[in-house]
Image 1 (tube, rainbow over the protein chains, first blue to last red):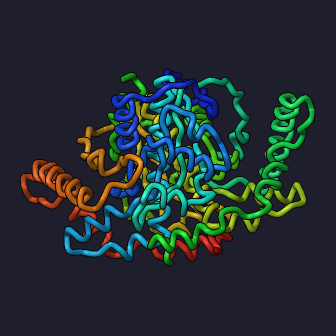
Image 2: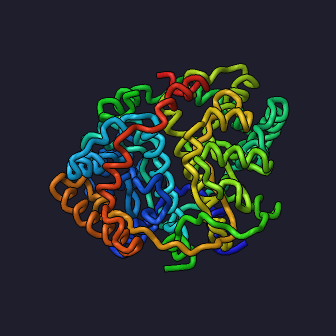
Image 3: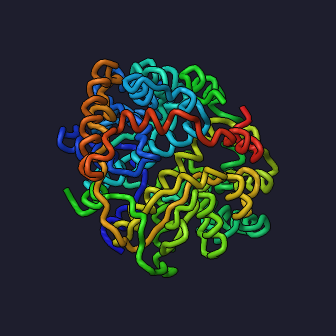
Length: 248
Length: 248
């Protein structure tokens, strides 16, 4: 165990921040950390938009179903898939990359590249004593986010990251049993997986029960069955296509 | 600056490892670090398969166009999108999540969740003195990887991560200028982006030139125009659909 791993294991999402602004030097070191992450075939197929305009922050709060910490933080970053710069590069080189960037492969590369960069930024921020939270609900209305940030074609917002000084100490929600995430050589069989899920249901059920004085008793299994019943953000495929991605 | 950020900034991919095996305790702390990452709506929509079988490792080398370090390392992890456990959870709860997991939204969630977890694993490994490299070329034949690891429906391999003791000290390839990745409030305009790309072309061109005694002179712009000319892995969308994902 070392300090870095301690930070990783102590992660929890922070949704209440103290009044404070990031200075330029910190913003820079966070972006440098993000950029230092691995990237598929050197493509760097992501962009980060820093939201400093308070009016824009408020509009993002609305997209994110009113989550106030999208505005009330030290800094807010929006991570995007970005193939616009590759389109420009191809123009400079008198070539074309359009057939490549419109594939599902490119969508996966962009999403993974953005994820690796974002997680480096989060790890760097937390190592400096900041708290962070990912905001996937920007995808509630990615079209509005895109208009607000004036994202050109081939650029799609994926999620936000709010950074700030923690003003709360939330508990750590239990993760899936290691064996339900980590398999050896082959994926674990269904009967073993069901057993692990039942075990996790009991663990998360008592976790919620303790924190709600018994009001909430359903654990992860029933929570997922309920929250994932109705498909969400079903406009996304069409939106990606309008952005000239995901045509296949 | 602190130790964690120093590690992040010093990252380079390592493709040659010393003879060495990870012990169980290290494997466990790496998986715990991965699991500690944020996850969209608590879904934990990823799986990690540890490859210990040497025959399987060799077959993965073949998928990865012969990259020997897919087998020659201390440990090899395969990261996957995983909604199989949510399907099982829905069965237990007498519900259905099939309509949700087949959306493009779910594909993005799975890819991002896997990315965050993988980057935490990489950061933890590097903090312990190991080198790492991502292996996206497992997607050269995701179907074969899937068969090899006996991945059920709703589970799709995304990339591998090789971990080992570094036996090389590669240079750090220059990243895009910060302003080409990091935008403020709105995406930078095309003329500024072109300028940044020209600047980056010059920087990477001399980087490669120095390392090849002038044999290679093209920089990032021309490299991308060439490497991204022909679309790759165009079977992926069909494969995802066969796996009951990405139906929309």
